[in-house]
Image 1 (spheres, one colour):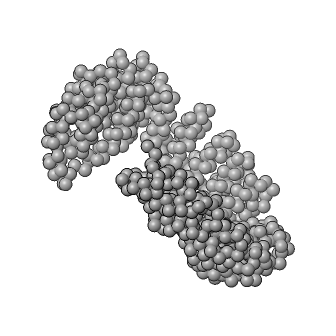
Image 2 (cartoon, helix red, strand yellow):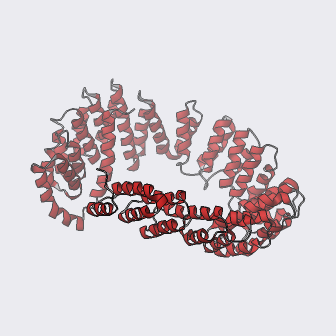
Image 3 (cartoon, rainbow, N blue to C red):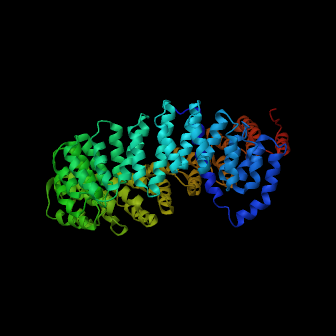
Amino acid sequence: MPTTRQSIRTASFLAASLLLILAGGRSGECQTASAAREPELIAILSGDAPAAEKAITCKKLAIYGSSAAVPELAKLLDNPQLASWSRIALEAIPGPEADEALRKATESLQGNLLIGAINSIGVRRDAGAVELLTAKLKDQDSGIATAAAVALGHVGNPAAGKALRQALASENAEVRSGAAEGCILCAERFLSDGQAAVAIEIYDEVRNADVPRQRKLEATRGAIVARNQDGIPLLVEQLRNSDRGLFQIGLSTIREFPGSDIDKALAAEVDRATPERAALIIVAMADRPETVDLAAVAKASDNGPKPVRLAAIAALGRVGTPSSFASLLKMTLEADADIAQTAQTAIAELPGNGVDKEIVARLAKSNGKEYQVLIELIGQRRIDAVPALVKALEQSDSNIRGAALTSLGNTVSPATLNVLITQVVGSKHSDDAPVALQALKTAATRMPDREACAAELAQALGRASAPTKDSLLEILSEMGGAKALQTVGAAAKSDDPQLQDTGSRLLGKWSTEDAAPVLLDLAKSAPGDKYRSRAVKGYISLARRFKTMPEPQRLEICQNALDVSQNADERKLVLDVLKLYPSLESLKLAVKAMQIPDLKEESKAAALAIAEKVKGNADEVREILSKAGLEKAK
């Protein structure tokens, strides 16, 4: 767990990063605004404003402040409540005045306030503070010494680096850790400035120092990257290290390493690593698609330990070429289900249009398991090969027919949708029906023109069997849209009891508000009480379920539902909606419902409950209740 002082340092640098970005825009319009606002903000700091207002003012000065604000901000650096707010502004204000104020404050501050000031010096990368920060490295308070070390790391110049490298030998373990963190920051700066040799020296010193493991891991990564191509042996050394953390550092560094030499080294390492590690190395190799040693990955996929094969086969799906197809297809036929499935998934992901052409070409010459796999791949890769799939439906093997139906669901176009409809309505094999229905549902819900698709399904109802009609209505319900709604509504009002049941059930859970008129019409004209009640409840549920429904529309539904309901249970559902969306208008409707004999008491209770929730308009609420003979609870 981080210490309080570590948390202070982390929070300081995160806040400073954002504010430095904001402060970076001090030009043009921002400078004009600064000149106008700064005197007013400074006056707030120098006055008797509450601490909260001064804190907000400090944040504003981070954007609008200049050297003129520094004296007042500096006065707050010893204030426990406002010091951090003051530093936020001082970290962002340009010019030497802020640097000088923070340096001077370190002479008198103590404890966390001193750590905060040191952190801010680090944020500003104040090269003029190296001497005082170096002195603080020897402070008896290890928190202060550690903060100084990290601040020196952010300064990152040669003098800071020298002080930090010496501090790696400190007798204090916490200070050594801080010095290591600072050294790594320094090394990063040197490396970015083109001084790789110095950076390597520092990284290596941290790696060999008596510092926490995390610092060693960070330094190892830096040492590899700083060496560039000469870092390959060091990277490979980590891949062979028994320390799993160093092994992971090697793995992660693979992905950011330049050039192709590393790929050759990784290919060699796959052959000597344990299966577990070799599999992870292959995954990392595949993260380098531009330079990956494809031959090595292909070789690993063909034979060897199962974990290595699985990793290599999956990698071919990402970095393979059409030339990888033949060997992967062969693997899909292996007895090991994991190998076969991984290979099929790899082919499904394999880039290149040439793969699609090869799949279709091979399909005509294949049989058995390979034939089924190729059919499944057509669906997985969404290849336009409807005639070939239709031909597969003539096979005697139900597994092949099922694969063809599933692939048709993923590939048919609006022009060929009728192929699936025909299979659903008039399939020659009864055991194909569930698969055909699922395929039709898949196709229908992905069609770009839902209305045209719904029209085709509606036409199919006339020639479908009774169970199939129910299934087609289910698909229409999931599709939604005007034509689907019209068709399901017509089924609910038909003379067929089964269609009435299915249609009214589906309308009751319709997913869009446009079902309201259809449900209301059914509530008025349903052929039986069961379907009428179902329609009423579905109609009311629209008002309950759609929170964004305009209030006038919701109230209209509630009023209509009260009018067509034939029993108290249905009407109580309306009261529940009114209570769920309280307003003056819903209160009025609840009061009006008191006129319904079997709802009088429930309406009273609902009106009082709504009155308690209505905000504002207290006088109007009291007037409504008074006219109804009710009194709002106090």
